[in-house]
Length: 275
DNA sequence: GTAGGATGCTAAC
DNA sequence: TTAGCCTCCTACG
Image 1 (cartoon, rainbow, N blue to C red):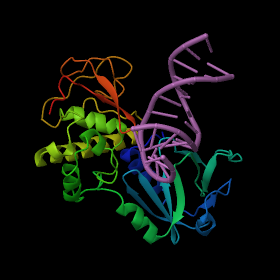
Image 2: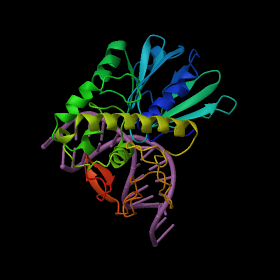
Image 3: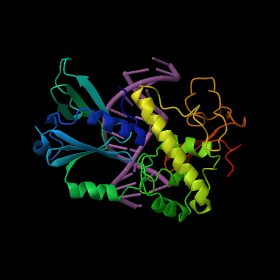
Image 4: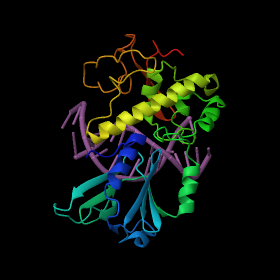
């Protein structure tokens, strides 16, 4: 199964993948001895898996392993039937059960934490659209109280957890929202629409991941009830605006623009994202 | 072979 | 707001 490059959907899919190995006993190795406390989890069973936005928590015995993949982190999964070579120096953690061995490479964070520390990490995160029944009120109030651009607010993990650079661009295009609109101008109705659409896109992303397909948003039903647009020809055809600067918008024909926002490349259509 | 960019985040200014 | 960090892959010589 494909790995890496995570927004919230990838982490959720990975959590499900780990959950398939619940109650298996794992040997945990850190080749560079760079994960303090890992020996306390070594040899324990995987008993619980939790995800929140882009954060993954794996419970081994009495402790949690907290993993955040950042932009480059990946799990490399292997069946035990395949020979297990010495881990490369960049492997942060190798997980070995009777059925699989998995190498974790390049995460922005990997640490052994207790229940209290796990709660503390989660307390800094906003609601996750993939969690059914999540309380959206706090997120809505925070977002509407800010003069920052909606394109920046959607990426703020302390408000909504799990949206990254692809989904902020696609969400705003799908609801025809100008990325530079301040949070203070976002109505209750528009917030609800964005929230539910975020869930729709993230859930589609989980399915893509599980099907080993690239993340795609083309062809999904739009928030205003209009028919999905046909896929656009060309190489970059999985999304409507993300990575499509200079190409025609499938909805209005204007050229997709790109700019820097929140230190990341933003893509949007100035022709129809006018709300 | 090398440069640059990529679905992220934090610390420091 | 910026620099810095993590690794992999593509485009370009």
